[in-house]
Structure formats: C-alpha cells, structure tokens
Image 1 (cartoon, rainbow, N blue to C red):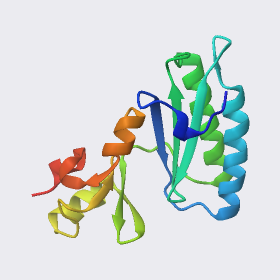
Image 2: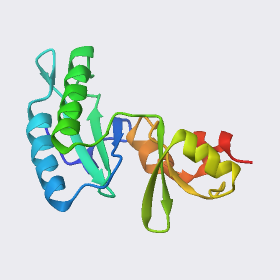
Image 3: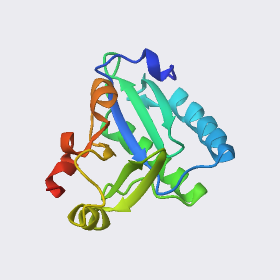
Image 4: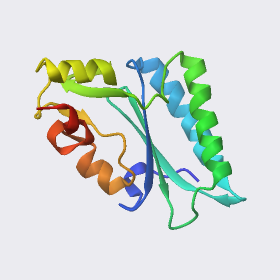
Length: 161
C-alpha cells in the first residue's frame, strides 16, 4: 500500500538506490508512475506492505517500508530488486552498484567509483568536510540524520587523512 514517505515512522526500513547519472524531469515522472504502481501492489505473503518513496537530487531513489504493519520477506525484497533492475534496463542507468560514491561539489552531485574517490582523498581533492551520501543507512531516522553528512561522519572517513 502506497503512502506518502513523510508519514512513515522513523523506524521504517529504507533502501537507497543511487543512479550513475541524473534523471531528466521526464524520466522522473515516469519513474514516479512506475513506483506508484509497484508500491501500491507490493506485498509479503499476501499482506500489504505500507511503503513510500522519495526521489532526491534527481539521482537517488529511496524506498521506505513501515515494518510495524508487515515485514518485507525474501520474496518481497526480490520483487523490489527485480523492479529496480527493470528501471535500470528501461533508463539505461546503474542503480545497484554499491561500490560507487556520490558526494556534493557545491550544488552539483558528483558520482565516482570507489577507486577514484580513494585517489581523490589521497590527492586531497575531497576532505573530511566533503558532504557524502551514506547509502548504507537502514532506517528513516538514520536517513534523515546520517545520510547526507560530512565524510568524517560516514564510512567514507576511512579513506581520508
């Protein structure tokens, strides 16, 4: 069952998919339509999953699930992964690669391989204060407090001096 992301509790489980490029406005509208349909009928063992989504910075798809109603199961998580893979194919974009890093350069969102990010850290092209996106956060509360943070406050810190 689709709900507004903002009404999900802070304990809601989230999944973040970062794109390797920005989506166009037209693509975002189509993605929203696809998400509306998918989440409206997303279930676990026949039980409704109370879920919502955000699209942030034209680059991140954030899906939230209120686990107080029903938990996601292996099959329902598989269904969501399959849905994301369909978006990847349709829009020729990478959403599943967790070995890439997104960070802010002013108002611009940069996207680099982990190898390139490590090299940039070594060359001091990024610093402990660089705003990074910690896509490993698992709850809505963590998303709101620890998703968009200085690198020193994220797993990215291990690459910085």
